[in-house]
Length: 188
Image (tube, rainbow, N blue to C red; front, side):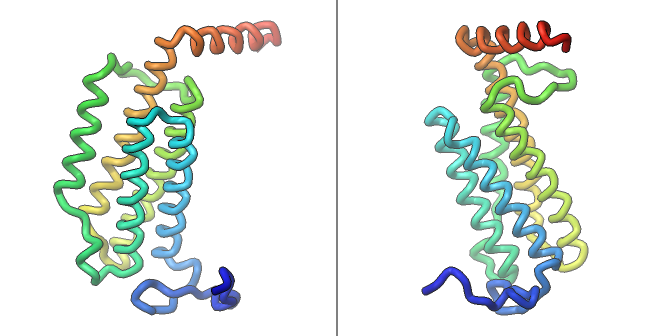
């Protein structure tokens, strides 16, 4: 089977339930944003330690479930549960208890891992806004929307934890010092 079908050449696509919609439909915009989010999580995953990599893989699978639920909202198999939200909250709590998190505004990009996680977090926030629009116009899984909100929180805390670990790593600290000295010599 070929990857291209030519069915979308007219600007239409189909949801899993067979309904044909415009590619600019709010649900398609949301699906594309979640796909972009999963891609950015993958980008963060490739440089993550094993523990974070495993968690990010689990999140990507949950995002696939979410996308299926958006594309086929009547299929209850794709609905999110309170347990999935609680598991993410427990992960956030565990991370927050692992380091002294700064309470002030953060300048993103403290290290490569945190920068990648922060990009994913920003996309998760956009997905959350698009989810609200879909919910207003078509209805949506309220637990999936809660999960998306917690996911952006998780990505934020994971990024701050990555910054903390990098600042504790002598090699990373040395790299950051070299960058600061180069910037200083350039008058910045």
